[in-house]
Image: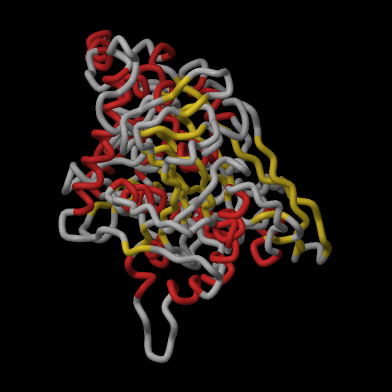
Length: 522
């Protein structure tokens, strides 16, 4: 039989994206390799094979207006087949329908609550256009409950008696690096394995069809595409990308690099090579305190800080380190989230959090004390804990979100419950304008380091900001914070900003050296 090809994939990543058998596929990379066309073709390949109305798909974006391009591309592609497909457009629905019963919907979705518009529906094919626009994985993961089908091949034999293969269940997303969801997408697809490597999640589940426990394997892969694979691109388009001034955006869109900070509030100043330093013992004359942002269903953040007073610290290699008085160094962190999960809390009580903080305080000053069982599960510390025992001689109370001092009817405040465990806090500066002021001051401290390396001394002239290299959690979250669209001088509060709140509280805080507050004497 002779066929007329009306569309065919480009060799390379586009062809691979269409043939890949994985359940969850991210087609990522530079601008221009044909990611959107691949997503549409991925759905279209199962139209007309016999699944009929069981083959349903939905492609999401965060706003309806952002669907305009993919809808335009779908009209160009699907009409080439001349198979009677109709595009229906109204205020309430944007979808393609085929005479054989298949349908593809275009929809808006980004919040967890948006899932309930689709709860109980069957979508064997789920797509996300520009996945990094999704601020968190919540809506993305919740839609997996709709990635199902009641189609059984034996119930719908073909006219020749043959059976179709089971209907595929797949999530196919496209994206460039960059965007508000850059961090969680990178954590899910890029960090666990090199691109092109299939990640396998094996689990035992009850199979209602066989009524037995069976091992099921779910597969996930990131497929990298480059504009260099697309011979139809105009070189002027490439030149336009190369001319982008923002180095992070250019690196993301031209190189497809995930090692960028994406539209960040601080990415023009943050430089890991300059701001991240190796640990050393804190001089006794420096102030060491901690800040706190409370969270239960969301993560809590406990951060420990050293503030310089103009005296020099001795580094392990014998050199002197003497940034200006008032400089801050992050020396420890305990972040309350489950392993490999973003923006989810531990649901740990304030009493147990306080027990953990009190224990960390003692470890920082070198006391050999047992870790509280209340902050462990099966002997493993809950949350992300990165500290260096014996790094200082004293820890004093620092700032915390003022909300922990609020009391309810016949109920102690969070601060009072923590104080019962020997952990006290000072109210953070949350006056009007403090968010902007905190971000501005933090940016100044980052800039001081950048400008300092240009001087003959190599040291900042103004208070600066540093991070000890083992505080990996903080470093994975703060530099990628994006600006608030409505207030570019602030960070977007819809992000995982708990570390930022704790950092902002401390940047705005002026500690008072309190005598007799040695932790080891408690």
